Image 1: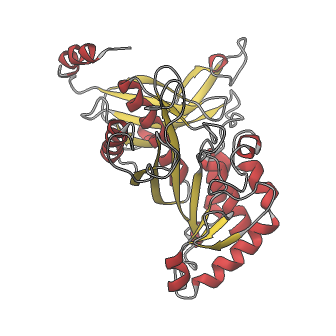
Image 2 (image 1 turned 180 degrees about the vertical axis):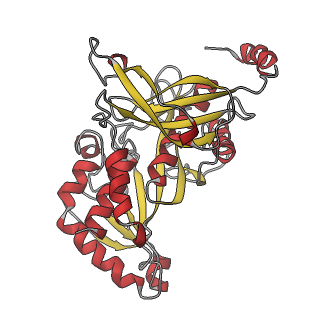
Amino acid sequence: MATLSGKATLSRYMDLPQGERVQVLYTWIDGTGEGLRSKTKTLETEPKSASDCPIWNFDGSSTGQSSGDDSDVYLHPVALFRDPFRRGNNKIVLCETLTKDHQPTESNKRRSCAETMRKVVDQHPWFGIEQEYALYDGDGYPLGWPKKGYPGPQGPYYCGVGTGKVYGRDVVEAHYRCCLFAGVKIAGTNAEVMPSQWEFQVGPCEGIDMGDHLWVARYILHRVAEDFGIVVSLDPKPIPGDWNGSGAHCNFSTEVMRKEGGINHIHTAIKKLEKCHADHIIMYDPKGGKDNERRLTGHHETSSIHDFSYGVANRGASIRIPRQVDEEGKGYFEDRRPASNCDPYSVTERLVKTVCLS
């Protein structure tokens, strides 16, 4: 890994003109359903859309997506973004992973999600996901925490400012600017309740765009943190004990919810969600609820994983109706159950199936 002085040396080479050809960074979700991988391909001309990028492949036996004796896995480009690291006309392209039979790999949840979203295109489902995460130093310890002990109790850190209250703001600011450059629909960011814990929001996005934009935002976050020598954790309960966990709260609405009288459609949707609570819990983290079990305890601004609840402005409920939505009688609701390491394709597809197709 390059040191700070090494980064300065690197800039001498990155300033070299690259001619007409461009670098396209292919990125994909690996076999864990949580990790991201990437490699770069040179194209003769700048791609204007993902369809301009050729299908490629990789060694799936090294990413948990195939066996060594039949290792090739296809990369099908699906969403194109500007590359904030190489800049210029260079791109990042998000890809689906497909088997030799051109079927989705086990960790490819996008294909099914896209098919579901096509069925409800006339309902215009909008999503916004609040991605919480924690930052760790190179020793695997929460950034800024004392090495032998704990910081002061939670209270001054949420949306805080000042030394001793926030840790890692440089990473957060760099990530935000990179997302804006890339074309990711980032909506905002803030320091969270646990020290060294942060959140960024992506949305509103319609349909399949939610998963595409959140995955690329996650990739960019890991790349930025890499430059600072900092580790990003999406663990739903990064520190045991009296500390907040990390979620990926999902805001959701359909066109009728956003119109006058939409609150009635919101309440109808919540009744449907109550009947399918267990199914949603299974889909809301990669381990079928096992990761979320450590987080959804009924404490630290969470509901119990075992019970369904909802309320206006209630951050201890499964579903929160924002105060302003209740007052205006239209808008959206927030599903607070998804874990920070969720697959957004699985979350958004499950919401649409329950609310729009049941």
